Length: 229
Image (cartoon, rainbow, N blue to C red; front, side, top):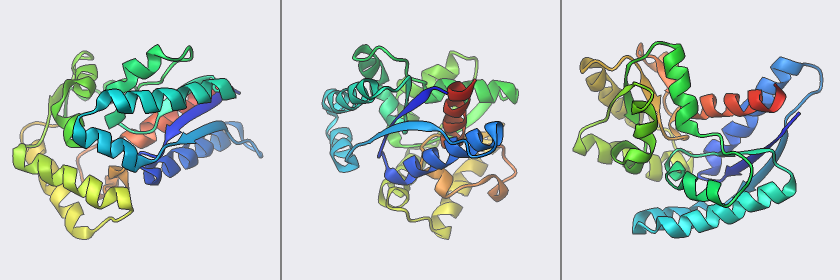
């Protein structure tokens, strides 16, 4: 079994789901008392979020690169960055290590193609929704990406940072997300990407008829299968 290097803490709420999901997959596939071999480096999210707000992506890349180097030194065979947004600096991190990073958007694109989804709604932080580092991976796979309007982007983003990252999942916020998803479905979205690793704390498949693609679940399952196959 390969050793998974988890670069987490962004936020710890979703990183906990990564740990649980990976081990659930390993248990299901291998049975018995099997569990995953995992090394985790959990950063202080307040420091990373400050870099995001200030647009200091180079500093955040340096912090995460050092963490990734420590995972490599500890014996990790590959790395999963347990967040969508910080894949913005995945190329810089990769340049500083010799083991591969399993990219969350590539794993998601593969899952969408398996389900024959050609047009998808993307919810996430404002960085993920508006910048190209994530969407380009989907577009390069032949998938059309729809994002919320300017006002909705702020609502979706605020709920992530002020509620979900603090472990708060309210019915009012769920309704706001579902309203955004419904509007994007009316524009032809065949599914919705929960493109922030915390959104799965708020939205589940049973909340909507629109197919839901939870990036935390997809990414963690991909890591588990790489580790055991």
